Length: 172
Ligand SMILES: [Zn+2]
Image (cartoon, rainbow, N blue to C red; front, side, top):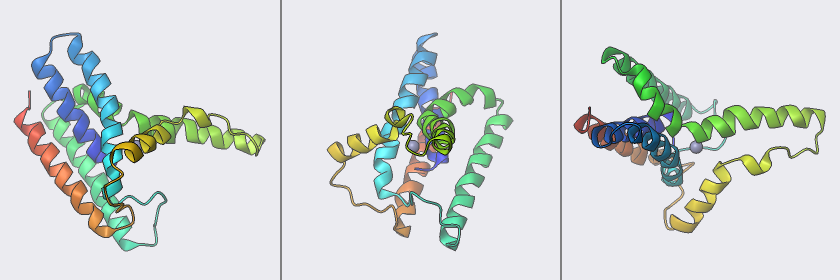
C-alpha cells in the first residue's frame, strides 16, 4: 500500500503501545509491531491499486499519487500542530522500515554493484518484500488481485479512514 497508509498504521500502533504499556515496553513494542504491520498491510495491498511500476502517462495514476503524498503532508502538519511530530516519527519510520530498507537502501546499492558487475546479484537475499509475497500467497491467496484496477483505491481509502478513526479514538 501507499506510504501514508503505513504511516497512519504506525501512529495508531504507537498510540496503543503508549496508552497501555509502560517504559521501555511502549518503545520496544511500537518498533516491533510497527515493523511487522508492514507485512500485514503489504499483504493486503493485493486488493489495492498498486502498479509495481510507475505510470506517469496515466492521469489517474498521477492524481492518486499526488493525493496520497498530499495526505502524508497533511498528517505531518497535523503532527507538528499537536506537537507530536518527533514523537510519531518512531511509529511512522518503523511502519515504513521495510520500504526504506528494500527501496532506499538495498536497491540503489544493488544497482551500483550491478553497474560494476552486471552479473552480480548482490543483496538479493536481504530483500524483505519477497518474504511478504510468500506470506501473502500462503494466507491471502483467495483475495482478488486489483493491483492494476482503479477500483483498488476504494479498499485503500476505506483502510485509511478506518485507521484514522481508530487513531483519533486512541489518541494519547
Ligand atoms: Zn512495502
